[in-house]
Image 1 (cartoon, rainbow, N blue to C red):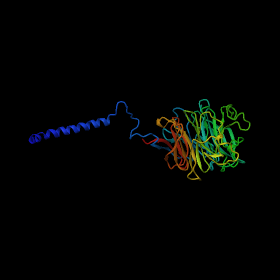
Image 2 (image 1 turned 180 degrees about the vertical axis):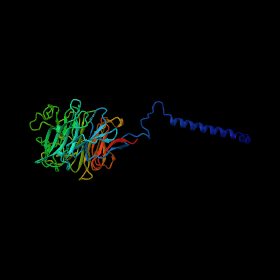
Image 3 (image 1 turned 90 degrees about the vertical axis):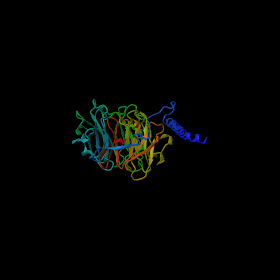
Image 4 (image 1 turned 30 degrees about the vertical axis):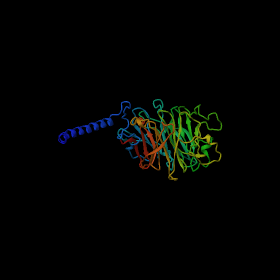
Length: 412
């Protein structure tokens, strides 16, 4: 019996090893092959990250003097960007060659105050350049009494490389009491009308309460029909046109210093970055064609009450969809941006990008969510003065201090 046992030991060892290998093979196959009732997906792996997680900046060009705005014509195939310099010039940047044209598109430095928050601050092309070969600008002009905001139109030459300063048509003049809070942006809405944001006129705390005064254009966003032989026409459906207590040009009120506005190219919604006093910076969202709102300043700064004098019930005001608290009461300053509708990063579609000028932080809002959530995604160390959009919906930004233009991109 013992001798027979010894003779069969090699056979038993072989069978035992074979059994172990067989069990291991079953376990490996079971681990790698999921049940057929639970199909696999390749949209998310450890090696794949969203473009938002890998957001970066691509250098485009430098050499600009205090860039305050980045604009494109919006026309298909036009790869040019137009950089607005506070001094009073509009420079032409060819994206393809990343070169700056020797001659500016426009030079009105002889009529612009470039001090403090004043200067040439905004530019927009007419949405129908074939029929209306014009640009519109927002600048601050000296007067015998001090200063004024000027909205003006200039005619372009045939290839849209030059705008004639002598062709200026004044659309609007608004007297300015102080040197700060000029806002300065311009945008055509999906309705074809020109939207003009104006700050509260300056100083601190809106001492004359202009933003809440319906008989002042300061602290408002205006809506104008500029496709007329007149300076402008007030659109018949402006929200206060039949209210004698309000200037009819007013589209919305309660703004402190709306530094950059933009319309979502897909939904037509309006988003505004409104600079705070010393506590909070805010982003406001206005669904398409929703005029007549009061955004709260100076009764509220963000969601917190600032002054109660003469204010209405809280329900009378529209509050921001996002805000962040100040870390430096002397400098935090929001720069409104754009909802991404570009082609290079489809997974970013619907995200609204904005920044803080002093911090250099870039923030994002997921506008596709029912409740907007905001988060900081990148500390750039830049002084981000503006965002811009090219004809493909790709997003760019400018560093005011170094005069450098960057494109938002992904490091994947």
